[in-house]
Amino acid sequence: MPLDETTGAETDAAARTVFPEWRADALPYRLEPADEGSGVRGPATLPEGAGGGPHVELPRTVFDCISLDALRDHPSVDPLVRAQLDAGVTFRLLRFPFSLRRPADGIVREIVFSVRLDGGAGSAPPRVHSIHPTREETHDEVATDVALEPQLSLGSLAQVGVGRIGRTVTARRSRAAVVGLWGERGADWVLRAPNRSDPGLDGTWEFLSVVRWDGPPGRLGALLTVSATVETARMLWTTKRVEHAYGPYELVGCQAIV
Image (cartoon, rainbow, N blue to C red; front, side):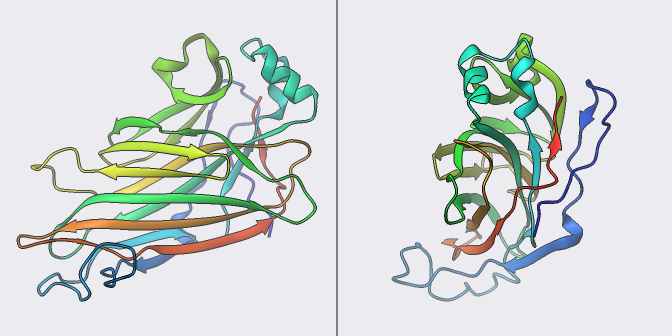
């Protein structure tokens, strides 16, 4: 299945790029307690009085994609990146969203959200080039620009400065302290409630990653996983990991950023 084409103003180079809504096509999952001996720390049974437990939602079939290949002539592009673009390296900005609903009893103190990439046979493998966020405390809504300073990266409006390319992606993320880590084949984001008096994690997050191919874009597959740490008045327990696999998909219909 091809990646959905995003919507947004195409005629104004300074217009905001907004990814389309994904929740209508969401897959709901209940986060169950981890089994003893599973490698995920937690109780073998749901704590008494824990209620319905937390729920997460992941997109059902596709992620959204923005092509960055047209940036080779932009003055903010570093010569090394321009040389990579001229040599046929492909860059895509992908969104990986999920939502969390807090449990009936207790609060979610921590979430681990992971993305692992894979490609189809016979094509260049996809590689993570950069991610956003890497470290920040988020609130209701964060406006993020795609920039090249000096390498293709993502940053807040304040961080981008002269590297701003004039297009903004708006990601809605609930209040949390977020740390992101990545390697060539994937990324992990750890979200924590900022302090003990905070009501815990709840809401929607949209993580962004620049993915590159050493040549034309091939097929893209991904595995998304989520687990959480839940605190009640009597105990702290860890959930099993839920996961959903996507693709591999042909990268078609990506919106161009200009």
